[in-house]
Length: 139
Image (cartoon, rainbow, N blue to C red; front, side):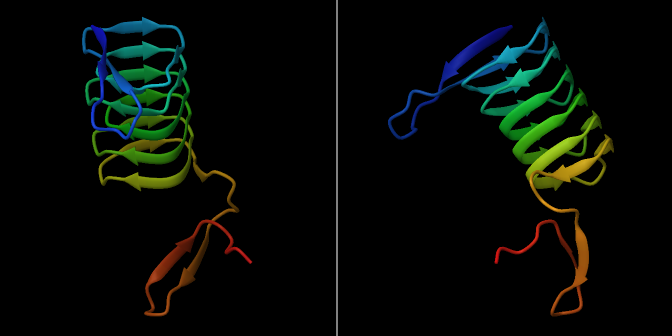
């Protein structure tokens, strides 16, 4: 079952989010201006503002969004400003991000790469702790 729900409380906009229930199977690309919550299965590319994936859901295709929260299975690339990969996530594909959070236990078979940044460089911090610099400092 798929449905759209209006979101109240936002400043002046009438944004909605769409829910694809666990019994939903979509074969084809999905494009939405709204936020998506996916509990079912999607076989196709997804382009949206934000996506939250349920643990039992499966996505086979590329995902492009501002914000992505993955907890199910994804077979395909992910490109987003903010990516959160929960411990139940299983990803087969490359992930491109600006901000990345990965819970211990998540499985990723692919490359992780910051968008528009040089390859990471490991350095020691002021307190002796290890730091990974993902982008060159602005000059």
